[in-house]
Length: 167
Image (cartoon, rainbow, N blue to C red; front, side, top):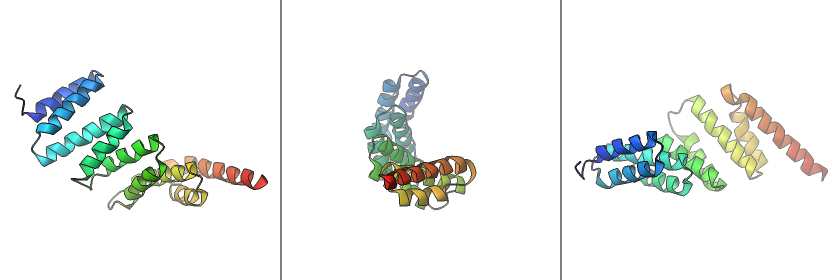
């Protein structure tokens, strides 16, 4: 195999991923990044690697790769979502909130996507006990598939606020 053929490394990475050899998949995608010259292909590889890092609990690496991607192209909301989830998993709530807010502000997202991001934002605000912003986001997310879970989260907030008042 030619050492400068990035797509061969991507294919080997995908095979390793299917065979559940995640470290080998990461190694192959990383090699592909170092030799890929086409910007569009490079972005696809970086997205795949960021997603692979996230799926394997390597949250700092996922954030680093997402930032690397976003430095070249800010329009892929899926990459920002990877970054937001990784921050959330690391309990870096303010960074996660910033990322989810950027997602909500993306132009052209359908209502289902915005609802999902508003729900995540509401849960994050709830986690840091900013109940006013949590309720605001959860109310915006209380449509479609998120209606029942949004309502449940708002009920939990009401119970927490009531409990706090009683103390």
